[in-house]
Length: 396
Image 1 (cartoon, rainbow, N blue to C red):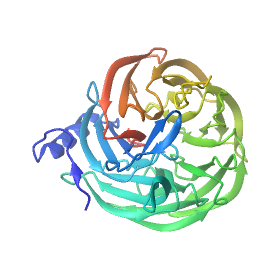
Image 2 (cartoon, rainbow, N blue to C red; image 1 turned 30 degrees about the vertical axis):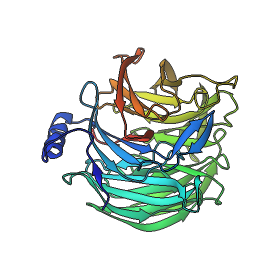
Image 3 (cartoon, rainbow, N blue to C red; image 1 turned 45 degrees about the vertical axis):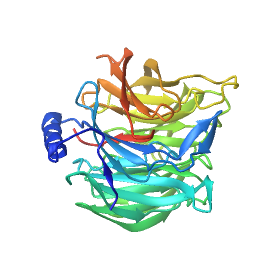
Image 4 (tube, helix red, strand yellow; image 1 turned 180 degrees about the vertical axis):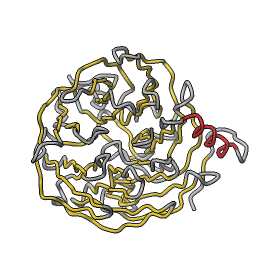
């Protein structure tokens, strides 16, 4: 069993009491956020470099109901910044956490990374929380989602062209199927499951394709419906009414402004109906718990060398209002360099964004109308470079 790291001094029952208080206070809103932290990779002169003899990767459990958000606990678990920042997923009851690892250090050459396939299962109800299983997904296990009933998890395998299907029963997780959707170089990045659990969208940044899966209970089938959006579709979200999806397209990272694609899921066949320009490299997109806003995290050139004409010292986050058939710009603000995941508090009034470079969370305040987005100056330290960030989807 992996060793658990305690970030701050808590009595032995402190975690259990904190969780009880957290769940009691959250009512209809998810307040627990989980950050997966990669200690293996850094940026040097705008290029990724492998850390020699790195500290173990970690997962940080964060209470978003406090102001500022506070660290509850840290647990060692394999993680990776390779792939979209959706490589962690919580069950709706916040009792179980899944973490994928797309890459690991090559035992034969510690200066390079090779594909990983591990899925860590963490029991959050244990005292203290602990890794209870390490399972195998596919090569480059990356973005994933859990159905709203908490019974099924779908994992995108970046270097395998497939999606792994896992059954969840309490703290027991088991792989029950692998669904092939593309070639090994198709770059299967993320799987977004509709709230009604009838379909899933699979982004493939290697061949600029989005694939559609049909879900019937535990049966997951590739429908053979593929369509295009923008260059390198990556992150994806689906609205609560299962009518619309939004996909972030990474582009070629050449300094151009990249895009979001709005997909109408009510059409037969479903298709892209609108495209929005959002800035350089939209790394993460996330819907607010009230469903009214979409936050888009862009690299904004902060991952480039300072000599690049497209360099910026900061990442950027932008808010859009989600309307029935379109997105409407609201506001934007700077965030830390090399930003990754973002998460809203349960009341949709606090927004946290990871900085892989600064190894922390930036805390922003969202005005009641969404028109004001303010950096509070507060930072939450993480146990490594923040690589993925999620709250429990469907917890209201």
